[in-house]
Length: 391
Ligand SMILES: [Zn+2]
Image (cartoon, rainbow, N blue to C red; front, side, top):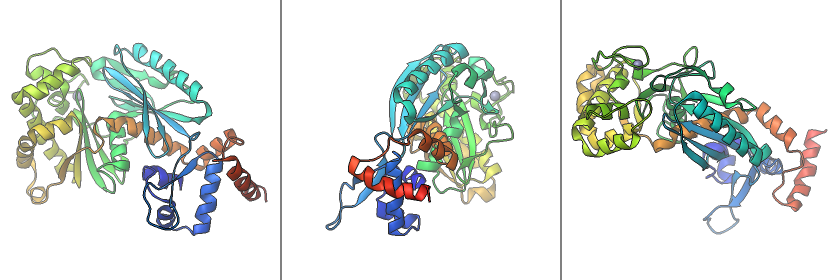
């Protein structure tokens, strides 16, 4: 029930959810009452309903679980608190100096301060980073000179945060509440300072053996031969993203600097946009040949490149497709979540860990006396649940 409420964004009525889950009406109403008593759900009347009995919509409880989610980009981070159902409240956006200590020390303190304020409502923290994440927390961000940075240790949070790659998180969010919903094999490309890519199979980013699978931005897909900061040569991501836009017009680039200037280039230099869109299209063709995805989703600057130079991108993609692919090429679409995908994916990873018997068991232990929508309801449902728990 909680998973269904979360995934639908707390938009479906209790009777719709009852049908979706194949429950008897009485079972659903006992279930919802128990979850309300545990401080996990709260029902509100549907905004509009036909004549007859008012319809209730289960959604987040006012004292219910909160996932903290952070998107650490190369020049700034954004922190949000997210309710069951996925609504995010931004708690802060702050630029940083790009060093591991300068980013993660103050961020860890900020998160800890919010966690103290919000108390036992906080069920965990998810952290998105713009680089490959190995073994749950060792992060490399080539442009910033990060090499095997132990992100959980420097954040210093208890319990340890869930750390993941920004593109993989963006793709996870897209699979849950965007254009990759119900897609069996999809390709997600996230463009910020450079390009990240990941393959989504049955709603999950393909993780790889150590967690760093599908680094498509670091494949030689465009015939370039320059060395990439990642250590390889001729990487695709050298030609797509803010760094590539800046380089194209002869401006300084790298080190996570120049976001505003790159946005200006995006709106004023058709030549730089064309070069980026062409490289993006050529690389997409190679990946489509390899993976046969149903759809290719573009987020971040990728969506803007597609909007500004979609024809150029498609014209660069088509000649690279095998004949068998050219007859039925996959759809190429802009993300439904814009720049928010990585943050929302970090949130999803926290709820994935919470919506388990272990996660809910811990919540119940910490909230034995705190639930209840109203004192009256609490008294009624409390005795019912007590009966269930201690036969
Ligand atoms: Zn590279």
